[in-house]
Image (cartoon, rainbow, N blue to C red; front, top):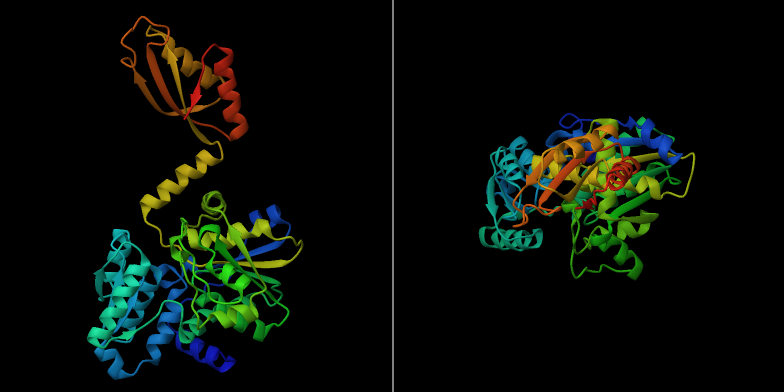
Length: 401
């Protein structure tokens, strides 16, 4: 069972190994939401995520014989690196099964801990099934990413740090995947402060825990579709689910575009890289129907490859109207490109990319014989619309991409 003694035991193992990431006050989100907002930045933790907590505690409990024989797990990233670190620290042999679609940077980061990495399948469920098969064939100790009370106890130590840093905490917002993190954190937080509210946050396209809470039993989703790959889980853990039922006060669901939006806020206002799963708690701040409360949002991790970061930045800027692209047809004659550029410059837009195609129409004498595709930087949606209106007033019919 998850007891206070078990949480203290977990903390004693972790104390001199991991970082106490403290909490960070957010003036930006405090002003936006009307609550007093802090972040628990586990994106700054060793291995870049909270998962190291449960992994270290679990591996510490294995016997020398189990460590020598070897352990195995399945993960697409954060749990893999947590187990890799723990195996290295406790001199245990470890095999990590990862989906073949896992970004190369995460595969290499996991291998750097000296563990054996096996790539199998396209999604986590494929990797999980293969890991279970290998565990049986080679008599390895399987370490589940979330459906394990030792793992949950390690993750739950976050509550000690949060409530020491801010005893007046009213609400903790916690991302949910399979339920291990929130089961441990909610259980300990309620032991330490019974009136605290623990609110889970799931992507709308992967809300397996919310559906299970509604049905009163562990329920599987038919499909999972979300950019928050760290919490893309079809079925909650049946071992941890009773603790979620007992101690979690509510669950908020978030649409993917909201994650793109808050990614930019975190980059620009806090200079932090937070992965999509960790952004769930940030996005949920705007969904709270309270004011003046002390709210801690858990940033569960920050492991993102640069291609994903680049994509999120571009999508976020377009979502906010700060980058937009339009195409316009114009005559193929000297000065037309200059006129377009002049209109944009007059409205203080900044051209970041331009494609000029003179061969879009076989009739080059046509008034629309040339196509111009222009990407412009603007101050926001209102400014974007002003630029487009100015083009229209000068006789150019700009079509937005």
